[in-house]
Image (cartoon, rainbow over all chains, first blue to last red; front, side):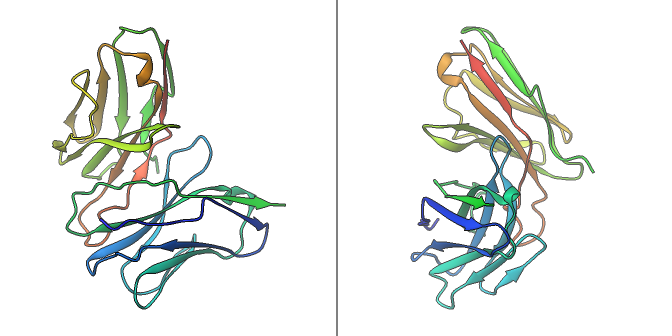
Length: 111
Length: 117
């Protein structure tokens, strides 16, 4: 599975869009980009995933570059409850369902 | 609808004692995962089941750890004997791995915080 690189921490003002980058330059054609987050003292929470096209759901948007070497998770109107560690995970559809969580990005939403 | 349910939420035990952690996955899900999280090692997959059958237990640290899934609605993770280095938060997760591309959409429980003294 491809390795990902994320900034260790980011800050964002409440009400603004939070844009979390992820580099995955070694991603292969059959690998998905998954995003999870973990709020303090809770279990990880699935956010969104994509293969090639941009995706949007009720929680966030996922923008994947055309060459698929990087992606951005967008929280359109961040709230204090979005403060969490965000994990970008690249995993192949032929894999054995083993999500590997790296260090992620610690996002702090400031009032 | 109920999410993944884990019990107990907190467990404090003495070294050498047996510890049993329990998990009830989301109804209808066919895959179940046990993870362990520590500050030093982060979040690690211990074992996962598909249709109640253990598929990969390569993450189980040693023979002191065992996991069972007797039916689709219940799983246990047992540590016997427990050691202080087993202190961690243990998460159970479940998924419905039938839709292509959604195989890794897992839903986590609140975790069990285990402290071994």
